[in-house]
Image (cartoon, rainbow, N blue to C red; front, side, top):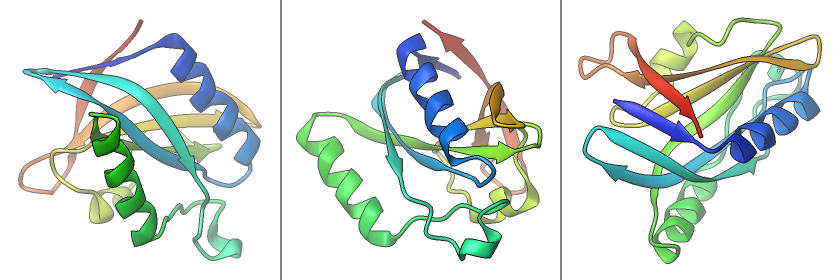
Length: 141
């Protein structure tokens, strides 16, 4: 599977995740699926509602955020294809916590933010057996 992301959206994610440093930030990926390709059409940042003292390594959103994004995606004739978040001062590789809370058939884009600067971005998808993440090709357009 290939995940396609416009450079302007990548830059928006980088700026958002740099602004949330030293805490994690994140949001939703809206797009379209066509065969083995996912085209990200928009990214929408969502406030981190995890306990304040844990936000440096945890990110969460509310069920209401999910419902609102589903409705917005439908209204725009798009699909909620995934989720993005940052790893402050850590690599862009899913953590055990990410794996435990991930959903199958959803794309996860993780941005490594080192000392306040976006350093790397990788795309992942939870395996069908939910035991690990599989790397997905991320193409910047």
